[in-house]
Length: 387
Figure (cartoon, rainbow, N blue to C red):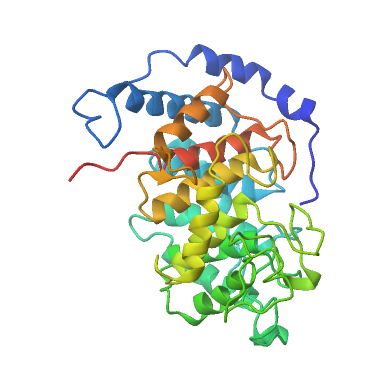
């Protein structure tokens, strides 16, 4: 994405509104003991989740622009993430802020089915995130047509025979920011999320093609992965892409291996499950072992603070999809990851209800984007009821 704000611009532009948000941050609702009788969760912990979430929602209400966008209309992916985060946090679709954001997103719908800014280079990313927002608001089927059209558009972006890719090619089945850019695991996971929300089943050819690419993003040599990188590390983690010579944001090992890192490992694991793999599949087992060895909420293992809030969101979504309530690390310690994540986010939250990553990479210096990631992460932290 080409548009970049300086840190001072992003922080200063909402300074007056942030003061208002702070003044409004009292009097929040708390949960009763009966409401909080859930596995490993006390009433005070439940109340903490609600308090942190409510303050974040207030922040996003105040920072939305009059045209329904957050940060800039030129990068609608941020708006789509904010809308999705509000909806998944219990804000109804007819809420003024959400309704205005949805109106902006639907106004971006193209004749080809895509949902993106006309000057963007990120058609897949923007369309996929917009589908997530519209799906979350589609209780009465009012967005069925636009979602169905977007599904067809996204299928056309997948790297396959139409791009003269063969099933044995490293990029086959993946998706990038747009049709003519090399595929990567981050964009592929968003495409799978969107297809899944559109009702596409695991056995669908698009999902199975994607599984081929995802398997080749794993540091694990199997019958599904014969890339030159497969056996160089072999730790079961995932990296950014094996295509176009291979790339890992965590860098290379001495033997030319592509280092695994946490955000892509969770993304890869979740995507494999979406494509139908079960917990007894060797690929899933290897990824879970990597996660146990590198369990952390202090950083994004492999990248430090870079992409931290993207990681929190993907971490929570993946463990929720896998229905894991407690995760044992490599030392055998058991982690109530939901409670630990809420506690981490509560300590990191700014007085105005937002979050910001000082490691300003991938737009994580933007408090709107980072607050959306935090809300999305917390939407998976509601404890499951004891049966």
